[in-house]
Image 1 (cartoon, rainbow, N blue to C red):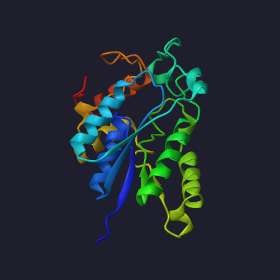
Image 2 (tube, helix red, strand yellow):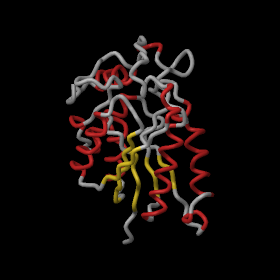
Image 3 (cartoon, rainbow, N blue to C red):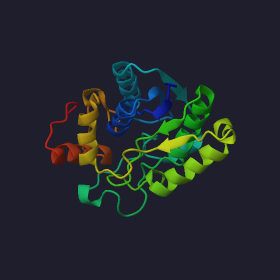
Image 4 (tube, rainbow, N blue to C red):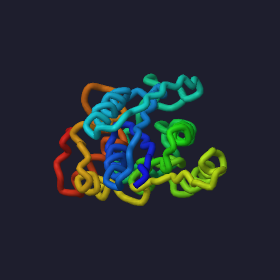
Length: 224
């Protein structure tokens, strides 16, 4: 049987780690892709390496320097990361933690890697339910990028489609946590906090949504 290869975008967080182990469960031979783009929470890259080691998959690391991304509080330490009440996360417009075109950039790099290594799928842990209001986590965006991957690659030109898979897209965080448990994802190794400090801040959107997921799933966060 021919080996099926998938490129998995791996940040080292809850969602991407779950997506990677989902891909392994689906019998894909995984190549992980981790990207340094100036994020404050650079510790997530160490988490990505640890997850890749635990999963026994190769990891490709890319560093980008894009000065125009400094308008985001996720990349600019002088800007305050929002501390929103849980019930208001995702409401009231796009938050300051939005990084312009981040998933467009990430998926473009993943498409390039996939076309180079002969992968038939790209897996992204985008989540459209429990999220902070980012437009590039929504189903229409993922669907549109699937068309880009089809039209703009050697594989697509040869009639061999390159699929964009987002297995967590319509799951809330509770369901993500339960899926992680089902596929054996090592969540103790993951890092989700935006603050970039030694310990999770518990105040940023990512920390609050993660805590909500574990609480509603009735499970203890092994990384807390």
